[in-house]
Length: 427
Ligand code: FDA
Ligand code: NAD
Image (cartoon, rainbow, N blue to C red; front, side):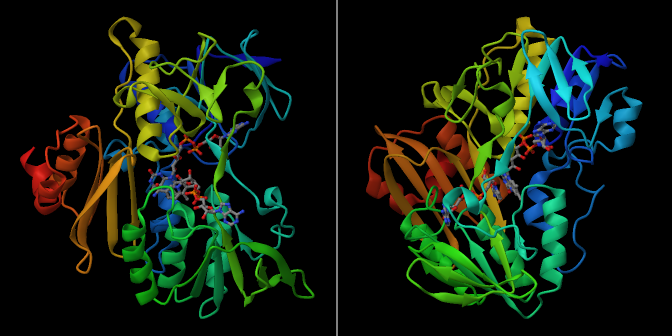
């Protein structure tokens, strides 16, 4: 027993929503396309979960942030899928896949077959247990990957007003959740192993600005340290965290953001993998011609970086790789290789930054780090390869993106430093 579709999208996150809108625009017939998702809701803009969803007042709630509102496009509610004849198979985990037979088997035993499969399974949050720490299943320890996690985090947070939160990890989740917790009047201590926050992206100078800003909001930092164990109360709730150097910190709640693992498991041994993800070509096609992969799970060649294969864990990449895969499937003759400009951003408190390109080579900071109008360029072999800007306008961000996209030539780094943002605006 089973169902058959021409196109199946496996996973119902950001990439699935953008693939669906693209299929609809290109004219998919009713009953040809299905989306299978472990989540119980239609695709939504995942970034909202660590921002608007955690606001103390007028928080964002579905259906307001279904895809594709994040790209100022149509909002795809369950009704939209129905009207377009796109089957949403929700609350359903696929437990095995056979790419030779072109079948998927769900946890309830149903076989779903396809002619073309798009893998959009995203990633899962790494657990502390994977680093040898036990007890992160306690009810006041939160991870944040999906809506269920966000609902739990909101409930724990609301029960903790005025209390102490410990945030483990100094990456995106750590930074955005720490800001949200502080905004909810919770005392926050952040702990991470590196010398400064956002170590994969920020320079020490950029990190210093954000850490100082967070400190002005009451957030404390413990750097170069990791958690080794939890101390629990008689009900099993965490009441303190113990660090490697023996420090004891009282905690009414804990938020953990220590990275992710792409969900490749169903396809290991069947498709080529690279950089921890499923390897695809510039048309998002895997080593099996009937199977495409997009979003967090896909490792694809970035033309701008000389076709170096990258796996980008960010929403813009999920949206654009998804749209490109559908273009390659529906109009193969006119669709070439994706020419993607890597784009990252975050919004915390009243701050907001964007970064384009790659943070390699020589870094040149500019602007005023006291007033919060600053940025940085990364140069390599005499051209701009990366650009960061805090607090820019739309025009400013477009200008830095363009400087990276067109590899603006840098003759003199001192001139670049003194021109600052003007360099990009003039380029
Ligand atoms: P995504 O994780 O969105 O979706 C994967 C889907 O597959 C899920 O619905 C999952 O349940 C499903 N699935 C997996 N295995 C399955 C199986 N076996 N059977 C059925 N279903 C299965 N990025 C950014 O650039 N700016 C930002 O501000 C943020 N903010 C942000 C906040 C938070 C809280 C998170 C967790 C992440 C971000 N991101 C971000 C990252 C961004 O959200 C991420 O890159 C995209 O969601 C990736 O989209 P995908 O569709 O690839 O995976
Ligand atoms: P991350 O990779 O950004 O940061 C992981 C952090 O975990 C590291 O910075 C490090 O400080 C810490 N860490 C690693 N091992 C540790 C250990 N053993 N003990 C303590 N700390 C440890 O990952 P994340 O913050 O968990 O984010 C998860 C995913 O969500 C990423 O793909 C990220 O891109 C995405 N996300 C993106 C945004 C955004 O782009 N604005 C916002 C939220 C989430």
